[in-house]
Length: 126
Image (cartoon, one colour):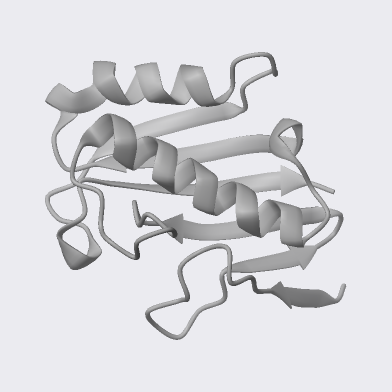
């Protein structure tokens, strides 16, 4: 099996030794996306807006690999405060309105890179 890295200026550059995404076996595996607003370069600290920013960034990588919003099959959401779960769900539901949302897991973690309040990783079919 071969693999190919996916990179796009439409999502934050990797901050370590990893790829934004990897295409392998008809799937694109998208690294965890922080809530960075690509229009400003700023970290979003509001959970709802942060979830949207994470999803927008994941979508930009998916699109660079030839996928689209409906191609997502699995996501994992990391929150620094599970009290934000309802707000995160609202933003997640709004993002996937009109499509079949992917399977998802959500976890509370004690800390995320750069002090982020949310991070989302994804897998999409292509």
